Image (cartoon, rainbow, N blue to C red):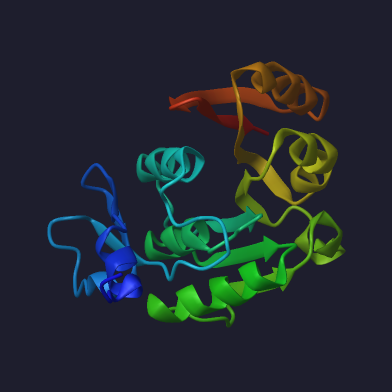
Length: 212
């Protein structure tokens, strides 16, 4: 077999993700310096963490986020994976961002990607390892937007914990599920005082927005 640099071959076949002209998600080996006509450029190091932007759920959330205002908002990203959604919110002007994931490698990748995008942990950005149990009393009523891209069962199980961290009139953005899961999630939100405010489709997947 002829020798070949398989890492270089893999990188050459690894596509960037473009969401209209709103945001482009690239890997470090794409060597992007600036946005090149996109409103925002995000660099994500592809590792084991979910959230490079290639999956429909991540793209759908990025597209939904692109149509929202983020200046001065407090944002919670549950199941943050690579951190791409929280990073995008911070780039758009969110001033209080909490990124949470149960997987240690996702937490490491999130911190790595914050650095790749000129961000870091401090007063404005915090990264926590764990699930809904790491949300504390000081998070109660803290967030304007809560994003959770996980799966139906976890979303149903933890929705009450998410809602407890939301301000009045805050938005809960959910993904990681398909059409049959929408109504159970809407019903669960209704039981917690939430109303459906938006639904979009990206391939077979859905992005559901509920408002407090």
